[in-house]
Image 1 (spheres, rainbow, N blue to C red):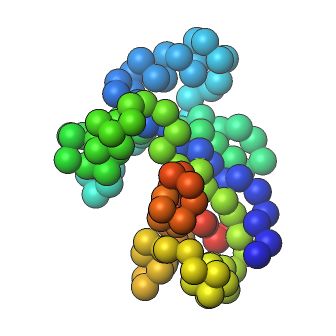
Image 2: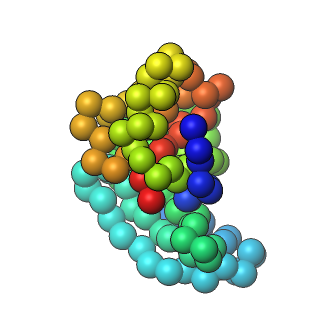
Length: 129
């Protein structure tokens, strides 16, 4: 499979405002925007890294959300690494033929997730770019 680049990295935080402060003031990154996704159960902050890549900080809206459960299990830190590919359908076929456990492959809409059981504990997102 031909991965093009790391598209983005999602970092789970308990307090989005504190996370924003760490990345702005400590690391000197510029906050691009914030958002709330009720559907995903998260508050989001985006830091553009250039060349189409970004770091996304996410705070769970509650403990029952996927990010809330991740923080409860293993604390704050990397939640997801997203890799860009040219053709999501071809990538899904190749991953499935390699025995990789996928999440959302039945209706990809430009993205699919590789289950952490298949990737040594890391949630990987494949995005079509």
